[in-house]
Length: 281
Ligand code: NAD
Image 1: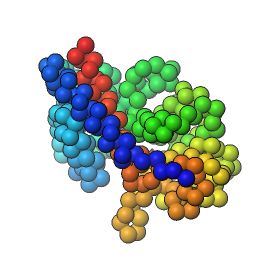
Image 2: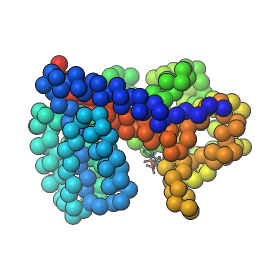
Image 3: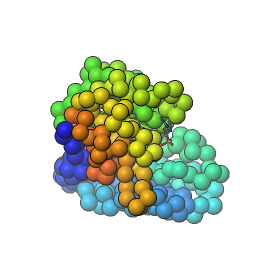
């Protein structure tokens, strides 16, 4: 069994990105990511702070818009409009979830597809489905980079994705399909999850439930990627996989923390530098 070390790979990627951002700066382009945070949800604040620190570490300017939870949809759309028009902004990220009075789809569609570094705009979703170049959602993008770095080619593999959200499961499915895997997507309405996971050479689980994937659900030698982030009773961060019992059966497995999480941030920075490079051209 080998650990897929997302922390180590993300550090290496960040070192490369720092060099790229220095090169861009010499050519007069200062890469910049704008982040909009509506409200004071503690988890969202932590994510945004992590993203800000990561930007600073690689020389990307982070432009923070922290607004209160009662901010109107119109006001959020106005901020996005001004960022769309600002030539010095390469990426725009709206931290989700948004308060209930704001229409998330409307906000995502307001972001210019050229600055949509989260890859959630329908334009970029369509390009991903069609196998065309665009911004790819950071978490599944990070999973693919991690597999690639360990020389894992998913071509011909039976892959099982658990979770079908727009952020994790659906783009994960498309990336695996584009890489010639045979993909099954399971969700809460799936009748017999184990029947699907037991067939899989590769399982990617992103649900948000502690110990959802247990050792009896995994075939010998499978690759397991754990996207889940949960806090256990002791307050520790854990994934969706019963790691202690599943790991011995796997050929490769990601830890939580230190697996997919750091790769997600590294891909956000990668997408921002990609956008800044386009500006330079
Ligand atoms: P979501 O709530 O939008 O989607 C959850 C999905 O899981 C749904 O499709 C649902 O049908 C499915 N599901 C629920 N119960 C299930 C069950 N018993 N069996 C099979 N499927 C089931 O969540 P999300 O935003 O996609 O996030 C999922 C998890 O991934 C969360 O723990 C989240 O914190 C984590 N996450 C991690 C990263 C990262 O960087 N590591 C990034 C995004 C999300």
